[in-house]
Amino acid sequence: MTSAASVDRIGKQWDTEIVPQLIDYVRIPAKSPHFDPAWEANGHIEKVIALTERWARKQPVRGLAVEIVRLQGRTPVLVFEVPASQAIANAGTVLLYGHLDKQPEMTGWREGFGPWIPVIEDGKLYGRGSADDGYAIFAALSAIGALDAEGLPHARCVGIIETCEESGSYDLPAYLEMLAPRLGRVDFVVGLDSGCGDYERLWVTTSLRGLAAGTLTVEVLDEGVHSGDASGIVPSSFRIARHLLDRLEESATGWILPSSFHAQIPVERAEQAGAAAAIMGDIVFRKYPFAGGTTPMIGERAEAVLNRTWRPALSVVGADGLPSIANAGNVLRPRTSLKLSLRLPPTVDGQHATQDLKGLLEADPPHGATVRFEPDQGASGWNASPTAPWLAQALEAASQAHYRKAAAAMGEGGTIPFMAMLGRQFPEAQFLITGVLGPQSNAHGPNEFLHVPYAKKLTACVADVLAAHASRR
Image (cartoon, rainbow, N blue to C red; front, side, top):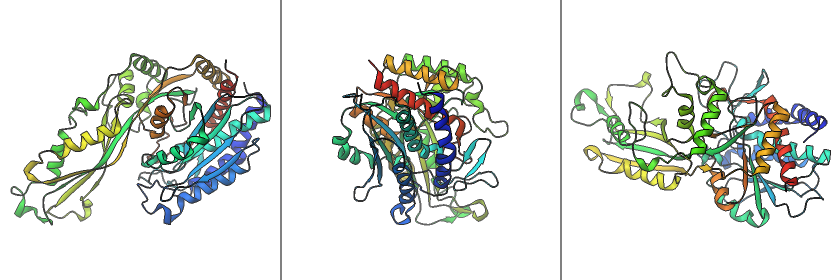
């Protein structure tokens, strides 16, 4: 285990180096390519990867090599390599993962706060991206540095920090193919892009949902016409879109209707959901900023956890063709476009589901309207293989050492496409997927924050688990 001196070293490095770097990082609007098609010309992604490269190169980690890897026309990837401790031979490779690209601004930030305005309040760093997932490379190298400073062992470590994750990591397969010879035999993966049920213990992510996303467009006219003249004869594009969504979702309950978008929930995952719900209690519901008298879709805690981790769910996350209310004349609009985000169970193939969704929505269009579903992201989820005894022991010991409470595990509702890719490429590898996205941290939304005290302890936990990996028998 890391000593008190190493824990203190990690904490001081967070205070004096990492938080100031993350403040600068938050200020850069490095939106993912789906949200900034001119990302290359705008240069924001280049700024954040250069910022992290400069910091990484200064780290006193023995043998550390840092490189920005580029492929023509693709978002860049930051790669770092650290050789194994001298006493550790043939221990395999630890792959550490994070990303630097960000979600778009979103409305609803508190007064004085904003996506590109870093604010520290009550130990939280507000602003877009530091928790999702800019902190990852800083935490990873801080953990390795702590081991080096204390003379504790670690295997060879390779870090891959991408800049396309929020767009589905569509550039990453090309880099994985290119980097395969350098990766070698990966037998342990540490991903720091996930969540935590509370800020009181180490949380381990056991599964991630997949995603089928795209834009549904319904077109009924070449141009808008007077609603008094045309309504009752010309079908409403919005009504047709609503009717098409009824094929997918039961509007009264939110239940996804086609069986192909569902999967059987493993018994172990259902048990974990029950245990996580018991730990979190009402946090299962209170973590969300419900407005007025709004109530959850389901009242039983364990079932609510399963709803957000193992069951499909539809969100309409954007729309075009709808004027603002202030500019809405009495016009029957020519078209409606809706951006759809369908979360998928971890074991459902994201590409197949996206094609199934396209077929479902485009088939037999009502009134012969022009209907198109244009996919922009089909990502498979991930379900962890059984946890090796050495890892289970290390996770529990780290959580007890740094949080004074037992570790906990549950699935997460988001998507990290890289995990599914790695699961296929390294089927025998063990995974530690964890993160800092806890209650009210609100990744992707307004008032997103990084809980700095939790992140410090998580960094120390990562150091302990890396040492345990190198010392396992």
